[in-house]
Image 1 (cartoon, rainbow, N blue to C red):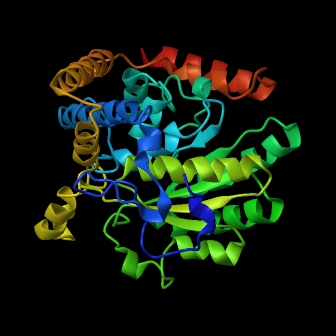
Image 2: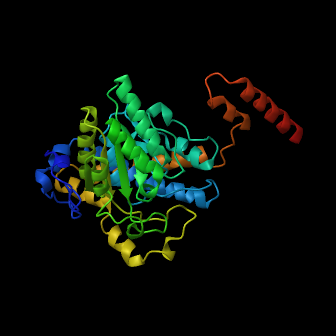
Image 3: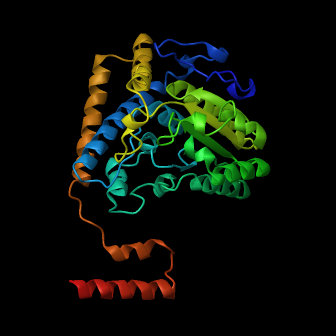
Length: 361
């Protein structure tokens, strides 16, 4: 593979596989080098799409408080997460279902986060994934700080902050990028530019040529990548991680993709975008693109597709079984995960809450 990060920042997103499923040859890169990984990434993208649909169904049935769909962004998420070591810390926002599946987090654990039964969900931290961040952009600072800690510890770790285009308008993100650049922290700022920050288009958010061009001001490499091309996303993140581990500091990656569904299940996107726009992006479906490439390359057949769909169906069932009418956890449990050893103040507060709950019964 050519070094995609040193070839100069271009407005044209880097792309290894075109929408019609053929290799582009862009930047001298060949997706054939990823043939051992692409089938697994495709399988994870399919599972992400199927589970995303099930999450939305569960929310509509009153089983979840809210859910932010990642429909259309599967390649950006799976390609990025697949390029990293399982010990690299990931700092998600709230739409990173594909990232969670790459890390092996059980769908039911993710569902508990959106049901509100367990704060932050189950199985995240054990797999080096920080809790879901609802506050926009704040976790970018956490990622930068964790990257600095990796440098001090000498653990060869890389951190990734998953942020949306809207988050780049927040001060926390700017501070995190500047701090990471100044300290040469091994951090990747991975922006999924999905076309809309809720109802605000990119044209109303910045005047730079692109979000990736903002990297110039921080003194770090910036690159635009086709976020619907899982192979390109994988390759760009691989190179950014190698730079970071080599002591060369952070990278800003702008993955150009599209949110085909609403911002969350509480949103009505028909109020701010046209059907023609959505249809145009639907024709660039990342899963279909990867499937066509795999078939044309002799890496996939009908039996493989049947197996993957069956696996995804089983995951949907496991999610529904774990979430549907799941009991609430004990309220006092929130005190158990603040400090390793509870402080006297927390112990007293816990006792007061338990007593108050007892009087309500």
